[in-house]
Image (cartoon, rainbow over all chains, first blue to last red; front, side, top):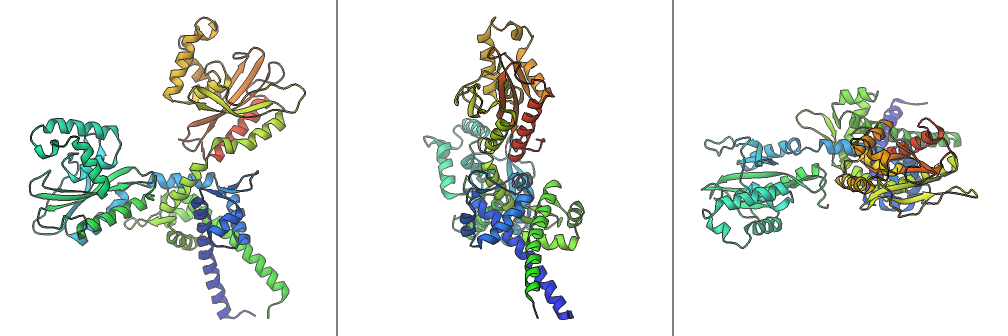
Length: 271
Length: 271
């Protein structure tokens, strides 16, 4: 006869099994994805260190749901149309602004600096969201401000990581307009190529008063699932008021938050 | 004390629970996808007709696996980076040739006609795989053959459903080359636009001896998850040897198989 104690432990076990089943199910799907989307039962079970009989039961259930299909000739299992639909819905949501918002708040709180997100719009890199620290005197930025590609840290991130023809075109126009006013920049044989290389090597851009006198800024790229740069995450402050080295606390914190956002957008560092 | 019978029924129940958990898990993911990828617990539970407490336990487990994430402000659940990775792996596999192979075999068996798959290559629609019935006399096609865009059923499917500039360019060249030889075609004010409209309205292309004298063919488009036409599925036979009407058995069987392939590639009829 069942006792109250049995009842409870039964429920607990039931609950654990449920959670366990989701864990195993996710392992099966991720295991298939990591094997290029298709694998034999043996290879898949080995990949996720599970009993083949157990993996087989999961695969059968997933085939019923359209998440997985089986090739009639090779008998390999592969991720099916249901997995595509779920992935497409996830990708449509992978919106940098929405994902970056909590990171902006965290950055403001930990660094007590003005920070913002910019996206590439038709006039150039454009500030779309910012956070300011609650200090007596702060640097103010404006939503909608367009930043230069060659002189701002934000612009250089787009220049360095984008192959967009619009970016190339705008950068060329800027270079022509600058003429003699920024001698140091235009003295390089190919200043655009030089900036691109520097940003790519560092994985970020740091400028000290290049765009606005007395203002330094650090910017990192936000990548989406395809590897494309979809936004830049930037902090800025008075030159001398913060550590602008690539190994400093500000740069490392920014880099970490940038990678968190990119990862949430499906970026894996490949592609 | 446990008896042998208890043991068996326990095992059976355990197996059923496992299957049930995958079914519920898949319902949660698909439910989120159908709600645009994000939803409140209440809306999601309602969408999939499940108990909110049960859905919540699944969501918690899926969050641990990175399949789902929760917006810290709205508290809505949304499909996460893990779902993107699984979807991307599935999309990379969504290869029309592989998926279409079993359909080609089924078509040959049910219709006893020559059938093939063509893709758009740089010279035009190109046959990449075919099946022939085992009859004494059959129509033979060759892998690698390039078909005309304006005169073949296969070509017209690509013309009708594609916005590719290469298709447009090749069609223009073909029209110029045809000159007076196909008077009926070139008599229309804009023959290319006329063909496009006809194919789009019918959802298929039927030609009776337009490309090769005495040969009729029916062709349907294969769409992928993005809605793009990635291949054409075609049957052909001697004119008079089969029903070439759009409502005939051959056309309906072909349309059905084409849709099966497209669905397996993630096509939903939208996009």
